[in-house]
Image (cartoon, rainbow, N blue to C red; front, side, top):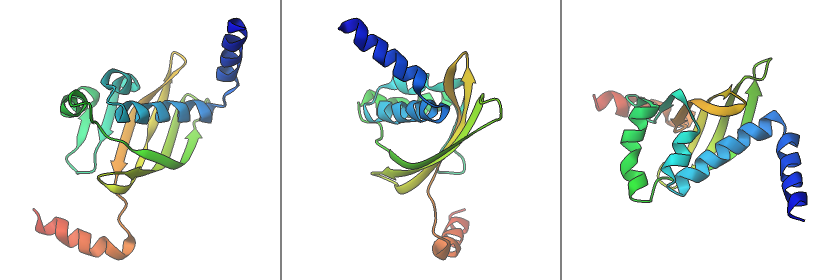
Amino acid sequence: MRWFSILLLTAFAFAQSPAEKVGAVLDDWHQAAAAADESRYFSHFAANGVFMGTDGTERWTVDEFRVWAKPHFDRKKAWGFQPHDRHIDFSSDESVAWFDEALDTPNLGPARGSGVLVRQRGTWKIAQYNLSIPIPNALAGQVVKLVAGSK
């Protein structure tokens, strides 16, 4: 019976569409953050990956981002983003994927993640992730004034 279960799981993995495989990587990445599993979380990045945070100054290499995030993971309380309404597209040879997703977050409210994954040796890796807070157009003028006043 055990071999049958392994066979079914293996067959399921091969039966996943490219979008399902990319989605599974992103889901596991978000789950790793929620579980404060630093090793698992950072294993999903490409070696030359970049994380861009909500502040305009936040453009981090994987190593820089890991240094910033380490205290959160050490406290066993990273962040818990719930993705939904995800859209994934691919290059013609399916070696590059780009996506956007809406996020429910406990500290930022509604947010958006977007980025690029690359397939390296058969594994999808996050090359770039951009976390943003969507600003309703009706509030954009006020936000622009606030940002200009904070400089």
